[in-house]
Image 1: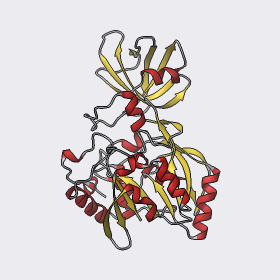
Image 2: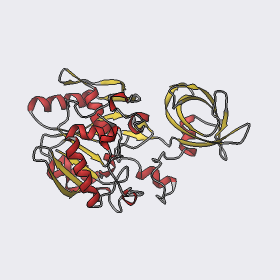
Image 3: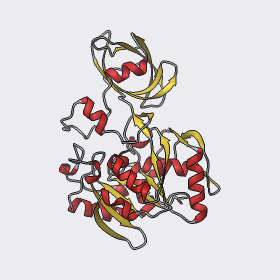
Image 4: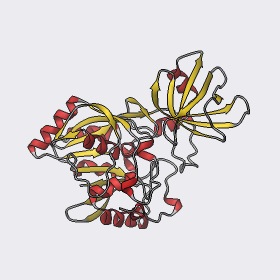
Length: 347
């Protein structure tokens, strides 16, 4: 398909710059029924009424790192922005670098008062990413990162008005436990402890997987033909308890809901011969219309960027024309879009 087939027009004022005021579950939720091709409007706190006892709800427990670092070249003083992606080996990370004349051997000072942190640029890992070897004085890298790192908000969120401590809390799901993401699995931002408890009390089996969000999830599609887009690999894992719960549900004819496109990709990546397998591995699964879903029966997601891999996955699950019609209605109804935006439930 053509990348342009996943375009839509979005007024800039509908791009959410801040989380919904009040409780997370006060956000709006558009409900798409694939069978009836109907669209309805609700609040996220209504989610339990769309779930049944015996359903399995799967969450992505990845936790966002304070993965953005600001530094300057030691020789020239030129500014450098660094986005950590994942560890390559001890003290060395694959990163995205912003700045002029980046080349192997460039030394960068990321230090701040009381923290001495330096990086040396190595070779390209991909055409967009680099290896950087870090040198730390005065503590372990992870501890220093917590002190001087910044929340890696998407570039379209420019007027949030929040301090770093608040950002770290709001740009994080309440169930995040596994450090490693450079962007939040944003469909989960709508959950509160009270809502999750209500879902469990209704007899829904809540399980978890982990996919550490990296370049693969948010990298733009730069080719005209979607078949030519290559996803960057991201690390994912499925616990045995989750695999067992999902496989029992599928055998019994009960439904499996994925919270977020990252969860959906994880579940689909670990399916073989109709069975969900536990384990850990890298996945670069790219889901577009025509893909035959093996695992999930329902999807909770946000409203995504035009021409993005996330929108393509949603279109694969619900149908491109239906999804684009829903997006047109979302614009008319003034839904909030993207990471801090409103939610969509597809059944």
